[in-house]
Image (cartoon, rainbow over the protein chains, first blue to last red):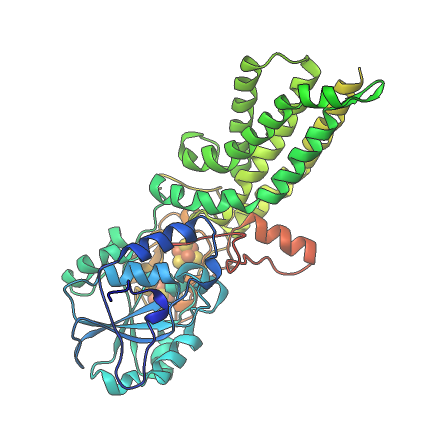
Length: 341
Length: 100
Ligand code: SF4
Ligand code: SF4
């Protein structure tokens, strides 16, 4: 029986080192989709250790990877037709970029993995190729001092590995740069979208119930009749902030993410007011809430963006959060008033 | 300047030309091409491109670079404020991601 190889079968053994295929099968692709949508992503790991690609010998290159399955897959896919070693280090299943920031893809861990796999007796040369983004956690000169291995930084993306090798193990300026094109942003949106789903449901429920408020008390029929407008607004603003604003990130000229989000919050409000006829005060109330919510959601996208700095995000939050809170509170009060008049 | 840049004049990156030997590693590790080598010294091309990842400072063995690094992530900063600790982006749960 020919079962598809799943990641659990990638167990490195001490004596016979496991070989991995450079072709991804349908399980790999299915897994990738699940991870991107945040379904059971906790266990998406590869067991740390040394892996073979093709038929490597003591002269073959050693590529370092995080034990996050998607990083590992991206790497092995791009090593097709090569003979090489992959040293997977234990980053607790986190990708290189995040792991380097948190220190798990770091100098100590790398040195430990080199020793644990006895790399020095498997290869004769003393060079390891580390993904460039790993430099956030790896200090090349300390690795050299502690393990004897020289760190060469490869390209940012695994797809550029062949170009890197062809250039004589040098990353050219183009493949060193971390851009943030629309495809990259699109990949990040699903998980970010799922991130606030419970909070979104709570807010929707609150507005659903508040819709039934009336001078005379609470009217169940009114709740069912008038709740559509606020609910559509909130869902619209949520999506504006976390889908539209990130996708069209450079389109809105403001540098602040909170402004980019607020801009789309206003657009959604205008569109919905063309579609629905509601009292002015309710329009304004929902407009303020949309502005606050969309702005907040886009602000959170700074965590996924690859060009925002900590100092910059702090600066932006310092003045944006008071406004977001004020808009949300005033919006909520106006909404309640709109129900009572 | 690249197609996308964040705020002007906020990053904490500092280069001490006195200590720099021009080895060029900062140029190799920076994901935003902030450095270039000219006259055997590193030079900052456009400081506003820096995202404070800290790779350059960590890899400069001559201690010529200083930067207060961290992940610029709103959720992490909020968490830091609420729990009164350093901002940290917890990428291990699905809260914030930077998956590649
Ligand atoms: S890594 Fe340090 S010493 Fe080397 S060029 Fe850059 S600043 Fe100068
Ligand atoms: S902190 Fe990162 S982005 Fe900024 S200059 Fe250094 S390597 Fe480049």
